[in-house]
Image (cartoon, rainbow, N blue to C red; front, side):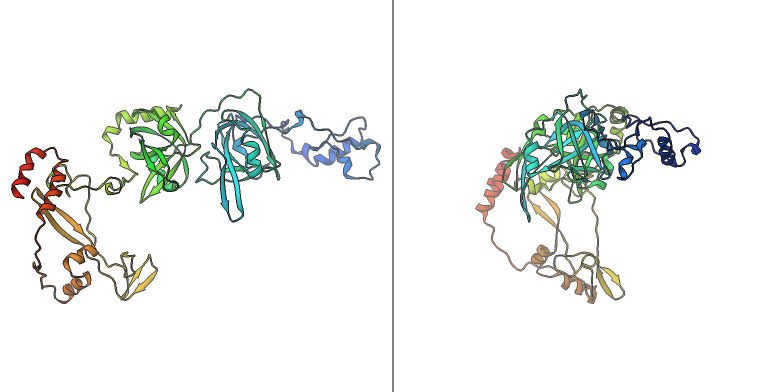
Length: 491
């Protein structure tokens, strides 16, 4: 042994290790010296190997009286292998036995169908006294055997090794324990009750700073942050089976100056009672990505505690009190367009402008980009020049020509005010009755020629219909009584 790495001081000693004397000469050809010593000392019993048999059994024709074969011991409870810490479980463990408390368990056995047919599965998380956790899964008959036996908060021994219990790499998308591996039980695996006194393990977090959340998309992470605000419980319809699901949004911030939305589902919606300004620790939240934004969501095994132990909690409270009010907070969660979540209604331009819906709003930044678009239908990615041709990195193709896309800015007005809007290709072409390619050709051939728009068609306004639309819009305004006479007088 040239070097060693100390993993932990908390794990129990395995076996009966002896101190090295420091003299390497004493350990040269150790096994041969031991055999010679035993041959000259017949009164002493030859030590057994790990299987309870002597090394003399290796040769059947050995007739030496000093080395009579020993009988194999009968296994007993005290000879069971020692407990392996959960944190040390790897696929290289030949035989192992772990002990811990069931910290979470799937509420029911799930059924799935694939190319091989139907199968059933459930999983649970076992946590030992060092707060290390590992996810264990069981399928079909094994799931039926152990599902009724396991209870949350109860301690169990789980044994396996060789063919009994497969240790494989953890799927970070569904495994929220933080362990690099997970266990799949088979028919030779064994689970028994542990009646020994077992202290409930403390929740151990490996928190990820919120600013680093985008690096863990579709993975389970631990988070420790301050609750910024808590939304009211709502219900949404499941697209899969049309069930109503309870939902609640909790916004979190941390010292990195980053905010993210934690979406709670089902049972956690009602059980979450943490007030804004409190520090919480989240074990095993899954990172979701949508339209370039990121959010957190709870899963079956997610755990949330208030005021986790440690200096980091104290540091978060101090930052939230002293520095957060002066720090610019950036949000990782992109809010969904209001038009997709609320019913559309008619709004007047004047009141909208009074409420700050304007292009000069501090919350908005306007960028104008000009480029040549890919001619492939549905692509429209900006092309790159390659000699006299144009290349699209998205389509991985090179073209002789490019496509023009029209963007039209126009001012829209009603009797309460005006507002600027932007209209894109199809709608702008329909309004102008002139395509983007025709306008581009005008610009190339004669950039001095101006395009003049003329009114060529006038249609009468349906006053009764327009009056009804305006009247319905005015009903939602606080100035309905003051402006109702305007509609009556004008129409």
